[in-house]
Length: 283
Image 1 (spheres, rainbow, N blue to C red):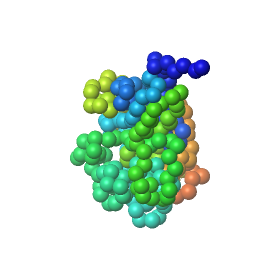
Image 2: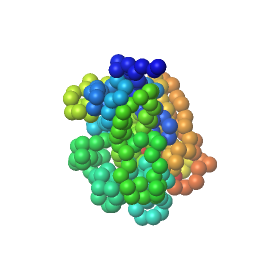
Image 3: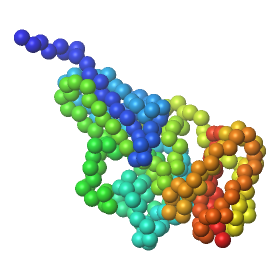
């Protein structure tokens, strides 16, 4: 005869990653129902709850601060090209990320809101969200129109028996080329609105300049001061990463781009814990 223990417990766990597969760390994940708790995802994106069997639970990741993380002029360009049918955003997650006012469609209002956020004219996006999280197992009926039906931003589990895995895809609103820093941190509140401790601030690089611009063969990058570890990434106008370069202990960098075609490019500079973006024109 089998006996059921009312004290039996199971584990609800999973990973939170970007749509590119990068782990998202320090994401507040709440569980409500038979157990109420909030945990932070680890450096590998993993979270875990130990809960009683037979319970009813709602799992919800959230992040509602650091709205500028990953949002640059390049994203506004990519969104405009999508609206003008020059180059469509190539995944449902990017389309959702472009809907920064969260009205279930992409319009000129979204490009304007990104512009106002970059200029500091508005402090955040509507609905108190800077990230959205979608259950990884969900399949969009029409990937080109992810708003066709409601997608799951929380997962409901009823009558739990046994360990269960629930993974989520996180997307940063306004970031259309996956440039957001993947350690969420600096989140003002837990999912239930209670305070949560912050982590280190990723500041912009003060004094970052690129010259000449427009350029013909070479581009010079001035960092304003010496940094110990620098990564330079170059992107096409369409937002595709073209090259990556690492440097150490310098304040000046020279890149030879004479073989590149004429056009508009974007450069991302990550120096120690600081980030900077510049647009470039190749003649």
